[in-house]
Length: 97
Image 1 (cartoon, rainbow, N blue to C red):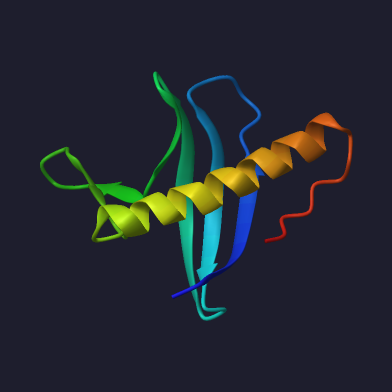
Image 2: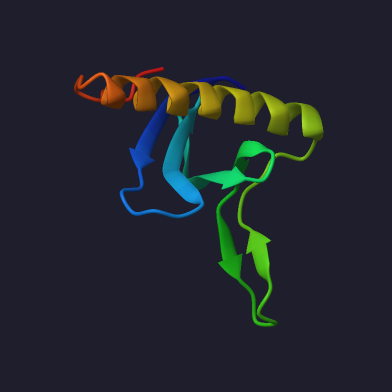
């Protein structure tokens, strides 16, 4: 499985959520609404979730092991950093991988 595209949408308002990301896997499958969040120890990703009947939030899609989660987080945060650097430099933001 390869991540073939990462699209970052920056969040304009202040808060812990910094961006919402969509990834494409093998140019065939898309996962939307992955969040980039500023935590106490730095940036991390949160997978798309939905509120269940008991009020708890449950991930809709997620990696099933820590190695895959780490690889996914690394790729997403690298693209997020690139988009933020381009925006800071005044360049047009083009979500490329």
